[in-house]
Length: 184
Image (cartoon, helix red, strand yellow):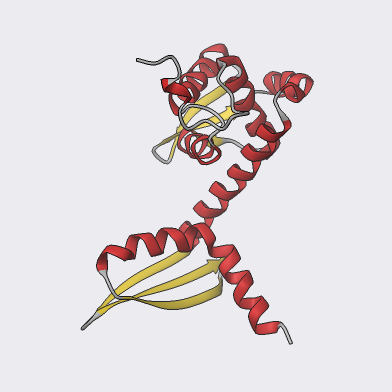
């Protein structure tokens, strides 16, 4: 097995050292000012490709064992919370992480959390037609229906792709529609 097997898919300025990955995970928890689930941390790391999935999971486990983060089960997933001491330590050394890694990671975290919120607050219904399907999307913000749109999909195999792409781009889709409708 080649020595760079676990580096595949990591961006050139990404992290390969376990201590750097631990620092990044703590930095994310500090920067976002909230706890994250292990699943969310994995999605963030995967989305921005700054570290290897397996190394990131080992780093989380080591942070738990070292007492830098607290782990508790919440809604069927492991919730990871940064301790006050670790937050102080991160404040002193966070700048040792490359700026691009910090920025990519926070941007990915915002995308992942936004996508989760949109999925949680949205309703999607697929209606079979004689030829094709209608996919109805309803995006809510608390009690307000923000966007309701129906899309015709000719083939069942495309439905999941359309749903995934809609949720990944819901904010820009909404913004583009509003911009198109309000521009003179």
